[in-house]
Length: 251
Image (cartoon, rainbow, N blue to C red):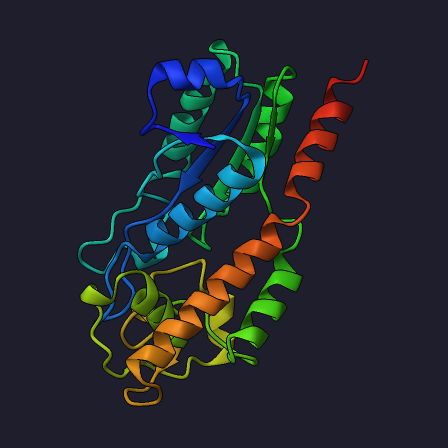
């Protein structure tokens, strides 16, 4: 695996033909968690996929389509047109240098542009392949929540799992205070139509109760969950990428 921290000579001599494009977000995570969590998660994905595929890993883009959080001060959201145009420009530039295989990964669950973008790029550029590692998502979630002791977790954003994640990745920025509330199930019907300031009490679609776990327990749960989840999503990724590329390039 190489990254933007390597030299151009090292990249040239490596023979690597695969690129990891990762996208995080800068968005609210309730009143007591930092806004760069999705970017840190995207970094984890990118490094794991880069190792698995022996790929060239680009720096994570820290902005995404975060419209649902945009009424919370500090959140940055960009339109899907702007974001996908940027990603397409990156791909075009790298194709000219000889790269042929691309993997896009997201730290933000609200990145609905991803599927359409992948279909469009694969149609528009027949000489390359672009995929997303979503082949094991359901099994990965089930296994990760079980191993971390978070079975039955009913959380979308900013609850217990988010606190565990932050306590593992950036504990210096976390205030382990109670936040969130029980969100009525019916609110899910409206989640894509308005800002979450209208659907939640404090931006959290989930709940965390102060004192429910020690800091060490929170940190360990975060570590176990994400290592398990990402390892599961990495399984079979190389085979899928190579087979997809082979089929697309077949005459």
